[in-house]
Length: 465
Image (cartoon, rainbow, N blue to C red; front, side):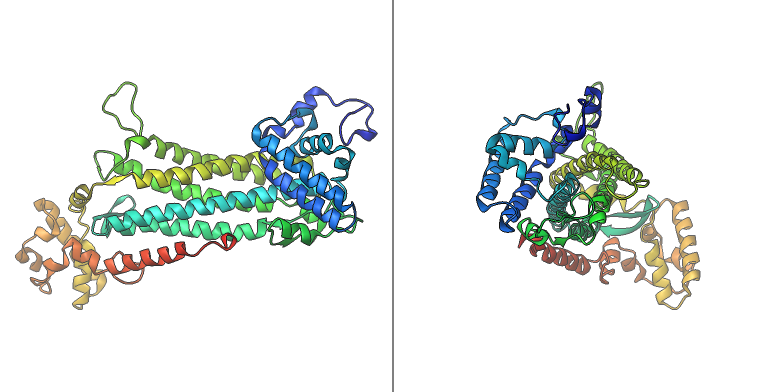
């Protein structure tokens, strides 16, 4: 006879190989806090509704407190044959409080129970990501303020394009991570919805109060369709997508740090604490943290595709395939959480070489657009101004000088519209200062961006209030 909690109709024990193949306790034990919180809310609701006595509800809640203490102390007896975190906790609870522990599962199924636990876990993870991403935004702002007067080449196609302020460049990432936080917040509202009361798939005949459970757990609402409630995993997909976009943004900055740390650029010096050396080349200082973070981005992408593929052929309602929803999310959760925290530390400890960035401005004719705009403002059609400027670049290349070093005579040979005042326009600092339109790289615009981001950071997230 089977000794499983569900084994009443089985005559034989489950094969050991099957137990090893189908168990989830090796990974879903991480959801213990959410499982206990959900069970305590469920027990309180059962007592409130008169399904069990209030004394029995109190016993269950107290017993679950003891189970939590044992888990956190490392003394909890996890058993693989009990399959998952839910049955392990319920079995130990029954050992502690006696037969009343067997009443905990009244009115619910493992189907709605596991979905509740997972929703809470995903929601808690999103909240943690949001806090970490906001902290990282703060570090970008700090570095931007500290380097407000530093200029560097802004690139398109990885080629020098126009001069920009380093602050503006750094704030571009702050805005990315702000959107990530907002995206996570929108997602979290859909994640933190209680499915408890859906039972196996059709609801239950017990007089449950799902809204009470949702309120106890700080959730935003309850399910609308019991079949959807136990079969749905798009909340996990959406959260995985949020994590994947965040990793992509981190990876883009990692790519820039890796280039900038190369001595041929020399734009940044990474701290020793965030670098490693070579086993054979003593001079090496490798940006391994940035490289590994860039590499882990592909892992996050894989986890999203993993769950999408798992879900694509599952009919309603619950199928055991859904057990495979945890590992991709658990892995992405750790990856996003650790990466955001580490990037904040690494960026805060990074030194920027303003002199090297300044010298790089002279390569690539980054002030060419200034000359074209100068001519256009004097009435020349922009396409013609573009052509004239191209000829000026070719002339400067032949002489091995920058546009600002060409003689006035040489420039006027290209167009009589050019006057002595062109040299002020070709100045790199002037070029940046002139771009003060909202969102531009000019100092007033950059200052406004920092203030807007700081105002956003000063407002607590909705669930923090």
